[in-house]
Amino acid sequence: MDINILETVIIFLSINSLISLYRVIKGPTPQDRLIGLNLIVAQVTAIMVIASVNFRRPIYLDVALVYAILGYISIIAISKYLKGRKLHE
Amino acid sequence: MDIHQKWRIIRILLTTGYLIIGWLVFTGNFSPFSLSIGFLFSFIIAVFTYDIFIEKEEVARRALLPRISLLLIYPFFLIFKIYLASFKMVPAVLTEKIDPRIVHFRTRLKSDMARVLLANSITLTPGTLTLDLNNDHLIVHWLNAKTIHSHYAGKLIKGYFEIWLKKIWI
Amino acid sequence: MRLIAYFFLGMGVFFATFGNIGMLRFPDVYTRLQASSKCGITSIISIFIGLIILEGLNSVALRITVITIFFLITSPVSSHIIGRSAYEEGILPWRKEKPKDKQ
Image (cartoon, rainbow over all chains, first blue to last red; front, top):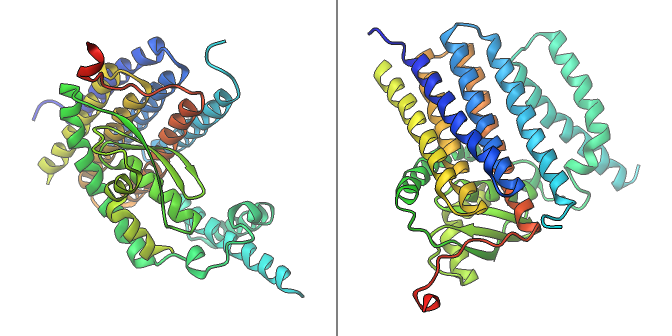
């Protein structure tokens, strides 16, 4: 087979994360932007894991794990920050 | 040594045990140096955080030590349910035939971990999303709501999860 | 064996696309959250299952399993927290208009 399936999957996931960037830019409420960010974090983690299998570099897996942990913590921190203020003032 | 002090020592040791399990899973390294470093830092963290992790009133044995055999089968059951949920999500995305409602109901689970797992499982099942979890009171957003009566909604949404989790924890 | 792995990878891309479409099309915060949380976690799990099948049993597969379990625990928690912050700010959920209300 000529084409590399893993790289094709990486390209499709990158296009998907660009589409979810639309919701981050346009979202009417802050929570909409957070939903977009959450999805982007998940897809970028998947891209990192696929890249580590494709390029045979197991060290990328640690990068993916740390990225997932940081994304999770940052989403919780931003939600806690949003809780203290009103939406329409 | 009174009973409160004994219970405090047991809580510190249990927290250390859970932290060491996490350390082993994330490092995957069984050399003596790694094990001793892990034990040292787990113990230091446990001394500071045992009161948050295990509350003073939570004394049932099943509430702290789950049934391991069923806990290992549970993720596969959950992954099967997640696939079912996503296949039901695809036509909803395409046709936009939705009728969302917010329903309230209670759970009969007693342990905190079991309640958290129940809320997570509800979020991952078809068309339901946990919005709030107060003691034993759940607020759930439901796509394609069939009923808003709290008892029947609870029966339909919780389903098998509560029975499973009741066997694993209490 | 490779074909099964490729099938799972394709399913991951499929669900990621549908999660995005749902997130763009649905009318309010809660319904968007439904689409993104379900389809997002399913795409992640399918891709990781495909990679584990592709790799076979070794240390890399073990690491991928750990990341999968981490996602299985944290993804519902983060979507639940976003939903709760929206609910506490008082954003009302979208309701389908009944035929009686239209007249």
